[in-house]
Length: 492
Image (cartoon, rainbow, N blue to C red; front, side, top):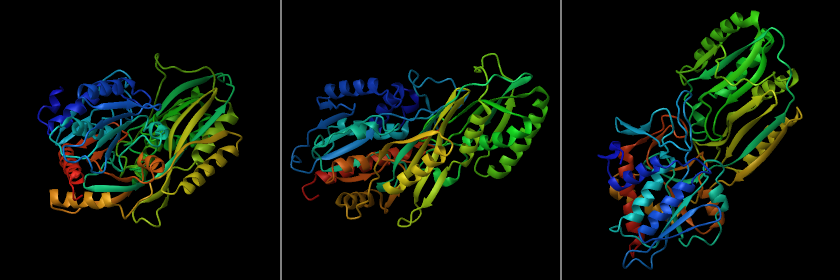
């Protein structure tokens, strides 16, 4: 075990999280972890099965005397968002996560930690392993591909789960029970081009906008954090006519559901404009820091010469194609579209321009749209598609998943609140979250299932530096054990 976990409690939960840190688990690459957990379940004497979507379901019999109680499903996802700062050499398909403990928080340096949803998975594994727990019939559903389209939950078949109650362990604020979430869909944009030759006398420069905080594109969208793609496009759009700038490449963002922290452009311009470019970039950096300094104190805008190891494609993007990309990306929406009119303090609809990749041969970009109302998610996505189609660019919606509609009369919520108050001597809070949980898809396939979600406090999910509050993990375990005991009791 990594020594960082040696003193942490509960030991079983952290031992399982240690294993999760050692086995790579990007979205769509969960095979090794799933195989390990299936082998582990077999060694524990627990029945398990893998469905066609790749989800792993493990069953644990009820404690003696609790066989007639309602079945409970614990649910979490195996995959993690894989994000690393530029300059950090980390291969998420091969390298383990290296956590560090500082001031009561477990975090990763320069990469995501995978506490989303590794802590939830570890809690469920500890519940399967602990023979002293008192509970009714228990199932644990480990889904795959949650972070890249909810493919596992999409592929879950009706009739597989036997339990009528579900505890989702994938939220990130201790002391809150979640009873609803946003649905969403992607808008994918693709446009092909034929490269123009590099104009005579032009020199290449590499422009980087870096140092933004990033974060979860739903949970953090209302905080008005910067989007590196939008900011760099704004700069390029202004500089292009002033410096005769031609676009060679534009890259930004690495995950559809993460706020872009960095964006990079390779540009070409007349040699006699290089000094002017540097001066204008310095002025832009000053302006952007004035505009964004309160929320993005680390913002940096710099240019450098091309290095020998930089891969620079031949040619430049044709002028018309450059205009289409810069104009449309500048005009494209990003951020909060509307606050909820029925749930105070909650974002109703939003959109994240999450990724862009443009070269002289064309490009691709992705928008992730979220809304508490499925119809409004589609309406916002249609606005984005229509914007791109004005320039003849192919844009299409994909991967829509439903929101999770709150059930204020939830009996499971009432029990969870009672247990929380008894265990911790204070009231909990009920929330609706502007993020995608698998609860929406699962409840659509199991309409009679009563579902509540909770989890430890996690900060910076989907971004390097992601951290989990160690003390809240122990409290989550205490709460989970107590809820299972209450649900297994004859009077529950």
